Length: 119
Image (cartoon, rainbow, N blue to C red; front, side, top):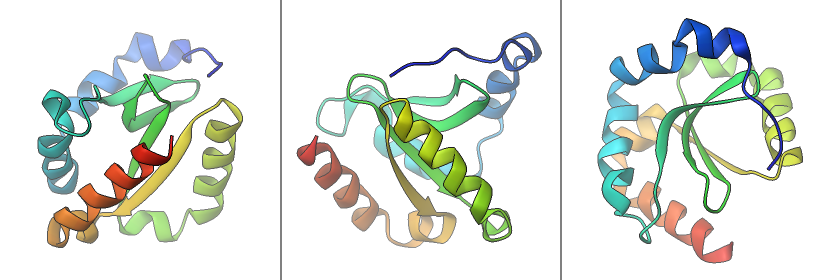
C-alpha cells in the first residue's frame, strides 16, 4: 500500500467529524467490525488515505469496506475510479449498499469473512 493522506483532510479533521456522525448502516457495520470480531482483524473507521476517507479499512491485510447509499447511483463512475486507485495502492475493495447492511447483516458478515479467507 502506497500513498499519503491529503493535508486538507488532516487539517480539517474531516475524518473525526465523519466518525462522530456515522449513518445507520455504517453504525450497524461498525458493531460487527469493531473489537476484532471478524477473523481477529483490526478495522478502522473513517480512515484517511490519499484524497479519500475510507469507510472501513483493515490495514493489516489491505481490505477496504465501502458503504454506499443512494447518492452512489449517480456517482458510479467516480466510485469506479476511486476503487481502481485504491487497488493500485494495494487495497482490496468490497462495497455494500446501505439496505444490504441493514436488512442482511449476516450475509454481509459472511461476504467479509469469505473475502478475508481469500487474502
